[in-house]
Length: 283
Image 1: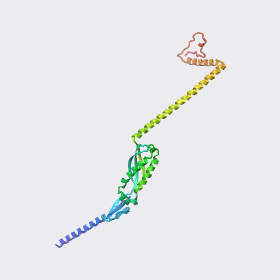
Image 2: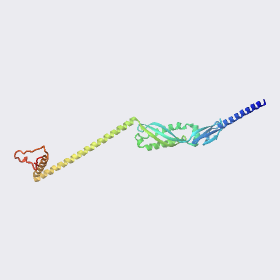
Image 3: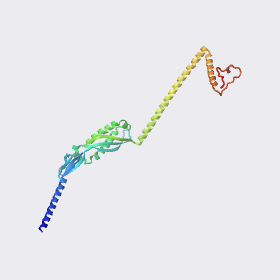
Image 4: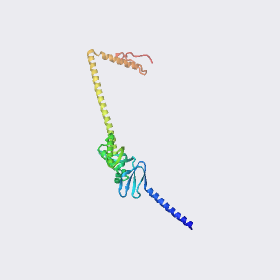
């Protein structure tokens, strides 16, 4: 009986010790929290509210039930969103914007109090659309392409300034996509066709002008040549014309003589039937 009572007492003691150790381990576990690399913690106290200090990396102590940690990722994260905006000349364009953002670490308690842990999803799309619409409205549709560096700079400066008001730091802002509406694309195509037609018309007009000038110069040359021939004929007679006629007849006769299928038979004794320099060798 004494042995049984001692065993029962030992088991009760062991159970109590185990319960105490379990309770202690539970309290110790609830009193510790870990902040990983690239993160920061904001502590909410049930009596004092959000504490103004930001907790860095490592394992830290807190009061169970009274305090609760909220973990923030402070590494740079990408965000992409699209917006359809109207230009100065009332054309609709679609733009895609990529941002690299991170929270301002000393301002994490303020961010948590005013925006919560999903602050970037609440703020960045709204200010991004606002800035894009405001900047795009300052340019015509074609200027968005010809002055794209200036457009990007204006969007970046405006977004950095607006994000700073919410304690968000933007490391990079870039316009990744720009697309016009179907009406503008059709208008651009028609404009290009009209420009090509205008260039073709200008070319035809220029060619016609060149041909007109060439015809005038040719006519002036022929008129001057005829005048010179007329003056020479009046001064020296028609001998030069007869000589040229004889030379032309000689060239024609030489060409005919080299053609085997052509024969010339003189008829009568008329002097105009005579061929000069005719090659009579049989072929």
